[in-house]
Amino acid sequence: MLKPIRTVMTAALLTIATFAMAAGIRGDHPDTYVVKKGDTLWDIAGTFLEKPWLWPEIWQANPQIQNPHLIYPGDVLSLAYLNRVTATAGPRAEAPVTGVPLAQVEPFLKDLRVVDEIDSLPHVVGLEEDRLRSAKGQLAYIKGLANAVPGQRYAVVRPTQRYTRLDRTVCCDIFDAQELDNRGRRTADFERFWTNAVTPDNGQEVLGYELMQQATGTITRGEVGGIEASTLLLDDSGREVRIGDRLIPVQAQPYDLQFFPHPPRQQLDYGRARVIAVTDMLRTGGPRDVVALSVGARDGIDNGTVFSSWRVGSEVPDRMASSGGWDRSDDTFGRNSRVRLPDEFAGHLMVFRTFDKVSYALVMEGIRPVQVGHELKHPDAPY
Image (tube, rainbow, N blue to C red; front, side):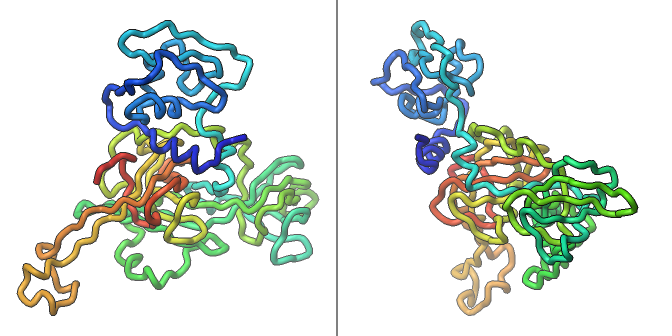
């Protein structure tokens, strides 16, 4: 039986590689260790090393392991770094020991993806019996699939967010996640009216449009005999489908089968990597919630990348240093009269799906809620 996800993932996150230093081995370690079913390299490292996040050190000390992500029950690992003993490979009768399997995290993931534009995507133009909503076993009629043939599979998706970035040299980048209506158009958000007013489209970079999967279906008839819409039979019990939803081809394997937690491949400038959204239209999230990040493959982010999430320190007025400071409102203090407070650690996130400019991560654990606007840092950042 699989270990509880909380135990497994917490152990994984606590063993992320941090700094390039030699691994310190516990004084009571054995010279060798025989891999057992259910082990992982970081489990072994956590047992025998003083710094358990340095699990790659064990691989480097065992050249017989050709792939560090594939060790097998029965493999004999050398733990003697200075005077290595002979290490041997075990039988290959059982499945290899790998990373954190998809099965342990999949129940918490959301069917989300990001595309560069949505206007060219095929869309639902009508529903069976002129319904307002349709579900499994019912028909949806699609415009924009002129060459569709019976048997083709599509996912029905709904645009939910438009992610943008404004590059500023004065302070830090401004990120925005604006909700979309059923047409995929931006809605009026009066709570953020002034933010949107001072960050116009001119100069903004569109990071992408978020699509949430509603259902999947199979084409049963194309645009034939004068009919101007293809017919899609909905064949799963996902969310309800409505007019305006878009279509994209079904992905055979949208997620990796396993995840190997590791720190970011490169240092990101402060203010460049932020939490830009929490799924289900929330602004705060906790363990097992999905969050969208403002960085992706172009920033060197890949699946398994682990960040620590930090509340950005406030800039507060130093009332003791100003004449009449206790009687003044905060907005009357200039930059030179303010003090930047430290950032505050919230929790750890692991990326599970990466696009070019945006990625999605799962909140693994933390001491306070993860919020939109949190700064992303190395998992072992001290401040």
